[in-house]
Length: 397
Ligand code: ADP
Image 1 (cartoon, rainbow, N blue to C red):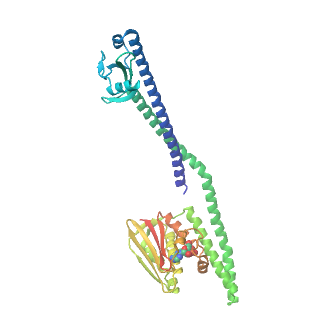
Image 2 (cartoon, rainbow, N blue to C red):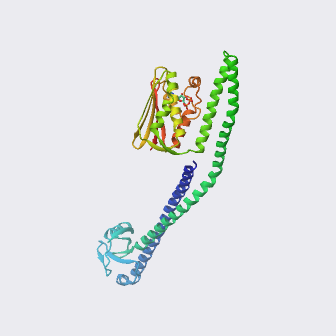
């Protein structure tokens, strides 16, 4: 029962680490990108400066023929943006005009599928503009490589974190699981130990009642003892259910529902409530027949208990979309909408005064819910106050 908690804890470990890695990755990538761009721009400025110095010292013809290295392309343009001089590389006109207007211009452009960073600067005392360009391909390659390595690293980290998280979650849950088991054992043992003195009290009260048939006290002792005994049984059932010792076998649910509900016929006629049972044949599932029988008894017992004389309780079991659906419907007092959301809670009684008189401890439906979830199903209730209630159990076949 702690496995889902362990999975959830591990998912949290991995999730938090994942978010952290993504944030770190984005920051590293952006810093690296900025750094690489700054380097390129510095190179563009230096090359433009060399061109400018060459022009100033030796004239434009010399500057145009000079060698500026292979990484940077230097081109020249006149004031209209048209190419000028010996370099065959076409100057970017928009950048040339922007440089004339603003003193210099730095921009990125796409040319034949390659991103270029270009810098343009008018040369003082001439009508020329020098433009230096550099392909950003090496930087893009480096960034792709970085991204690939970061993704690989992150995947490895997440895998290690998942394994480590699973191990750590197991370690930290172990004491909780032990404490939980001890508590279950305690409740089971305590309930078990309480049964013997209760049986003794009951026997003595019965003896008293035989001696004094009119004694209200004896009747009271008997009634309270019975209530206490059923409470102890319920506690024991809850503790056992959570220990998860379901002896599984193939069960014909239709047959089981019919026989369990029919066992309640004498009680129904006692209470002057009609009880109909209808169950489809051939609904087989793997489960614990004792628990399933107890489930039906709890629901039918409640329906009979909270339905006044002359009412009707119907039990219906059928197959719906690969699941067995058992519905127990009554025409009883119903449940307030506020109370309806709590009826499956332990020790909850919709109306304390009213239900105490009927002898319920408020554990029946929580046991029912536990039995249903133990079989991989779910239970729900709809009710109209004064109009009756329907409890529906859905168990996958
Ligand atoms: P209890 O032992 O008191 O019946 P349950 O857990 O079985 O405890 O039910 C919780 C409460 O839900 C009951 O006290 C009752 O108020 C309400 N309840 C359950 N079944 C019905 C029903 N069929 N009709 C009306 N109220 C119901």
